[in-house]
Figure 1: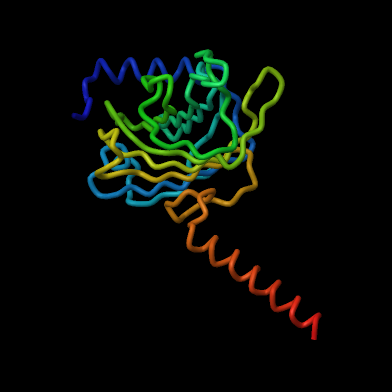
Figure 2: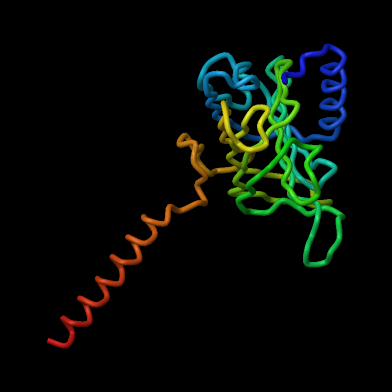
Amino acid sequence: MKVKSSLFWVFVFLFMSAKSAFAALASTGSVFLSAEPGSWVGGGIGASEVTWTHGVEGLFSISTNFDQGATVTFNDGNHWSFDFAAPTYDPVTNTNNGNQLEVAFYDNATRFPLNSPTRPGLNFSGNGRGNHTLGGWFDVLEIVYGTGNDVLSLAVDFRQFDESESMTGPSTFGSLRINSDIALNFTGQPLSQVPIPAAGWLFGSALFGMIGFMRRKKV
């Protein structure tokens, strides 16, 4: 079900404004978005694929959200928001006080800030469009904190499935870079996830190369 009530979006706008009240304007920023046909949120970007750059199409800002995650806003007149949060529960200490985002792959994410303590939080919305429920993943490739645990830079890729926690149906893929030199990802695949066949091939090649080298030394 798509939530379109005007009252709901008034709340969302006020909530986003509050979140970005202490946000820092980015020095550099860009995002690549690719929306599959039928994606409700992705349908609001204006094309099947777009790239937005800080200072050109609009302005990026970044802040730490209340779950010790990262919130990025993009203002091109349509007020886009990107939210990422780690699970708040820590099984090692058996506490639920929240965890900082770190360089890692976060799978089985659900809608932030309604995600359960044991699942990551994700939310991409804007232009009057948002999901009531969602599923997805995000891949944090770089995150740098400053004093007071403010997020200074962020490189993250994500995929958000509309209205489906099971990660099926139409989705939107995004590659977001704020104050980061890591290149945008246009593949739609998590960069940190090395395919097993490729990894096995590399290992096998190195092993056979070493064996051949040792044999030549013996001759």
